[in-house]
Image (cartoon, rainbow, N blue to C red; front, side, top):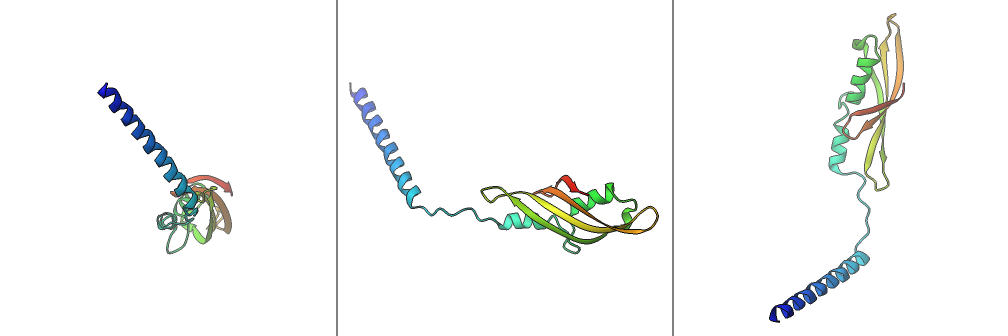
Length: 133
C-alpha cells in the first residue's frame, strides 16, 4: 500500500513538472525576441572567400574546370573578371553560388578570344553544373 501511494505521488509530481515546463515554454515563446538568423556569419564568409583567388579573383574550381575541359591552349588562360551571387533558402542559409567568369584564351589558330562561363557551385566550392558556356 505504501508503495502504491509513493508511485501516485511520484506520478503527480511528474505531471505537475510537465505542466510547469509547458507553461514556462509558452511564456518564453511569447516574450522571446523573434530574430531571424544572421544571413552572413564569419565562417560562411571565410568559406566562400577561400574559393576565390586573392590575387586575380577567379573561382579555383571553375577555373580548373574551364582550363581542363574547354581550352585548346591551357597556358593561354587569362582571367578578366569573376562575379558571384549567393542563393539562399527561406531561412537565409546559403544553398549555392552562381559564379560567372570572363576569361581570355588563344584558340587552335593562335587567335585570341574572350569567353564567359556561368556555373552553379556548392558552398564548399565544388562545381555542381555549368549553366552557360
